[in-house]
Each structure stands twice: as structure tokens, then as C-alpha cells.
Image (cartoon, rainbow, N blue to C red; front, side, top):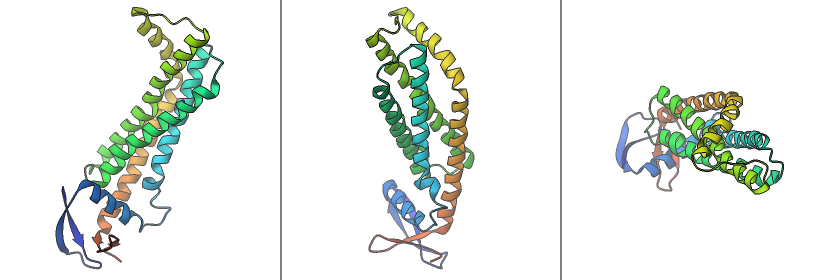
Amino acid sequence: MAEEALVAPGNKEVVRRVELTQAELIRLQYQALQQFPKEKRWPFTSGVTTVGVNAGFVGLIANSMFRRVLQVTQARVLSALPMFLIPAVTASAAWQAFVAQSMLAGNLNCPVCAQVRGASINVLAGFINPVCLAIPMVGGLARRYYTAVLPKGNDFWEFWLKTSRPVVWRMLPALLLQAAWGAMLASKEFDLYLKISKHGFIVLEDGQTLSKDS
């Protein structure tokens, strides 16, 4: 439960305090967010979409590079669809849970912490996850279509480390872009979060909210 002050319009004094669950607090923050112009609230409304799309494209790039290394030319669409959709959904969910909603719930109140977490989540869910997902995906296709001999036992890990190293190095620009975009988006969301917090809101009987400046 989180204690939240309810502020009357045009009055900076606290009217009363109520106990809010984290889910209720996030919902009220999102309702308060709707009072801002569309062009100003995009970090929370559209930012998560960019995170998902970027992760999906990283998945496609990783899929393409591993296919080239293992000489897999079959099932292009079959491997491309999950390599875009799974990273996109995973990255979007991770961003919502660990960055956006955590911030709106008041659990992420440090601007530097927000940037570090945003960069970390975007790298983990938007780069490392797609690359790791491409390995079994393309490896399974290579084994199925006999385009490469995949070792077993102790040589298995050595083979994939040797195969993955040049792919990761070539994808280093994507890694840096994901880190930079995660930090930038988290910074934008944090700035907007501060504006929402300063704006204030009250809870009406019908569940709507009003800013304290209304």
C-alpha cells in the first residue's frame, strides 16, 4: 500500500490522505498523464512501442547473421516471425514492468538510476535476449536441413562461443544504440514523471482525476 496525498484544484494544501495500492497509484498517474498534450506524453504512451520494435529488429539482424554463418537458406519467414515477435513482446513487457510502471509507482526516483536501469533493460531484453534466442533457432534449422555439423558434448559450448563472437562484434553498434536509446527514453520518462508529480491530482467519486491547476 502506498500513501498518496489528494490535492484540491488550485490548492497546494493536502485535503486528506488515503492508502493506495501500487496498481491504483499507477492507474491514477496514467489518468493524470492524459491531461498533457499528446506530443508531450509520448515517452509513456509510445516509448514502449519503440523499445519493442527496436528489439524485434535486433532479433531479425541476429537471425540473419547466424543464418549466414551456418549457411541456412531455408525457412526464412518461419524463423523471422518469432525472431521479431518474441524479442518485441519480451522487451516491451520488461520495460513496462521495470522502468515505466516502477517509475509511476514511485519506486524509481533518481534520474541517474532511471537512465542506468533504462539502458540495462534495453540491453538485456533488447539485445542479449534476441541474440541468445537466435542461437537455438538457427541451430535447430541448421541441424534440420544439414547445412552445418553441430558438435555435441564438451565441444558444443566451444562451438557456439566461437560462432557467436564475430556475430556479436559485428552487432556492437546495435548494442550501443540500444543502451543509448534506453537511457534517453528513461530520462524523457523521468522528466515527464516529475511534471506529473508536480501537477498533482484529486480523486473524484466517478473515478476521474483533475490536476491541481485545473
